[in-house]
Image (cartoon, rainbow, N blue to C red; front, side, top):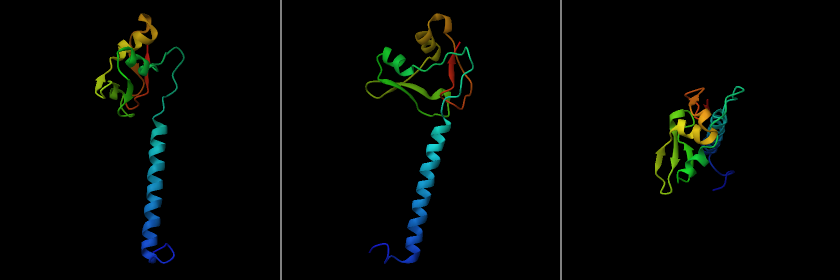
Length: 116
């Protein structure tokens, strides 16, 4: 049965389902876009080398398991296990002893960490 011979109600149902799927996908992309890092104020060095930091510890990379939580960052081990990240150590590794403290602008944005 092709679309031209499908019952009118079925065609409407399929069309509505496809529209809902497209809307859901679009909203999902919009949510990811809003999770982008906020602009930092001048003089606040970022913490943007977490992949390299985790690799320096022998892991594969880093991941924010939830882009809406600063507490969700993990190093991903070579076997796929997740390991917590000490953000103060990551700041010290990235910027040296002078910028060894980590803080965040927004607890609901995993990408809002900075070093001071």
